[in-house]
Image (tube, rainbow, N blue to C red; front, side, top):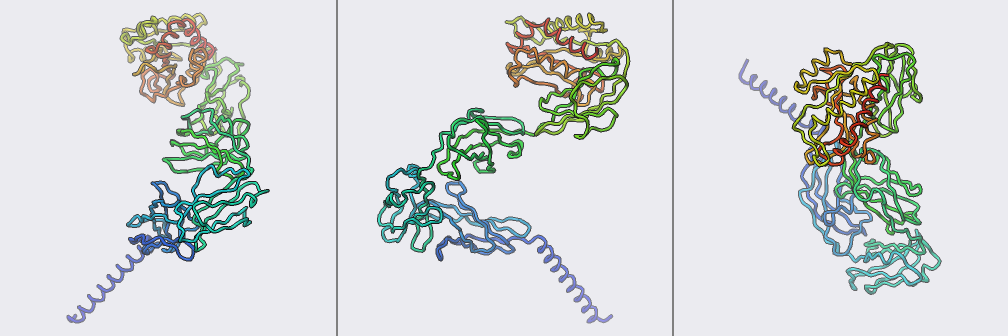
Length: 571
């Protein structure tokens, strides 16, 4: 092959590679066009319009203008070209305005302008005094900020689209004779226009308009925190308002405006108005018609936590052995839940039977059930395999052996070990009186030995009794532990807890309702890995005065309550 031919072939191949590279680059840029740098050039008035002009940004399909006053956004508009009209934009005389522009490409990618343009609003404007909102039979007066006798301004007065009055501005004060608006009621709008016929400022008067009464949020009073759910407000005042809005602010910015209804003194804001795990400032607005400027407002802060699950369904009786003819109830801690179930082993749905009355067990059966409630996830599906069989229950009681956990001594609470063993004495006595076989742990041994012994004795229920403590010594309330949502012990633990809560002296405060805790293998005496059916009860807090007093003064009552829960479950 000659040198010239070889050179020619190499040149052709190189040209192909270069062209291909340019094609690839061009195609990639077509798929994701890169935005070019650009600047905000000027804000100026042309043909009776205020316009923002920017240098074009390569590949931009839209420009979005944001105008800020003291870090608060007061205006926003978008345009498909780099010469952007600010339709109906108004500020106040001498306002310092920061103008930012964002360019966007066809994929929605964004790039900010390289500069922030500062503009001082020098047009004359009306002074916005609230005293002007309600006019009686007096003349209407307007005060002009930045009045300049050289510039020509005109005031026009409108009732809706009807022009009522026009007058040139000849001083700082503009007086409109009352006869001009006599007989009108509602909103009267004054426009201030410059010599180019551009509206530089507007002001609303409200004539013979029902005045909305002062609005208050009675409950919650200031700060509110709850799961993702409807928020109910108890309100007072707001007379004459016929429309209510819940304005939700996050970090100072309005993120949602919700039209809400007031029924007597209650307003409900739907759960889907909120995001989960979000802090809001709620401004409730009471409005007559659409007269927002003279609306009344009330404000509270609130925290909306995550959406919760409906609590699982538990049974009132033990399924592993049960007497024929026993009526079994289905329950869930979630008070407003609907329980669905099947008796043929099929998966329940919202089209399954709705639980209303106890179910009579006359033969072996597989019951599957779950619960549904508003603004919560559905509960887990729990399966209960009922077996008709006569059997004496075996309970393994395991009171605490923690002899160095001291309680509130002034009420007589010595150590957790001593008091829980006294409580276990009552539980044991009552269980045995009802024909139940009871074994107790040896306090000189430890958890490992107790678990082995409980398994060896084939205990139907391994039950640990403890009292609780907190770092600040202020926590209150009982709690009970099981391994997980599907544990066999879930039902008996739920029965024990709910019955105990009914006699707890702090049950008027739901903050103390600690409920069922899932240990997920972290507690040996409440672990499905080691024991088939087990639970650990923290009766209350021994280092908090009220809880410690309740335990000491009610050992007999508490013990009987726990024993009765166990007896009724296995009866």
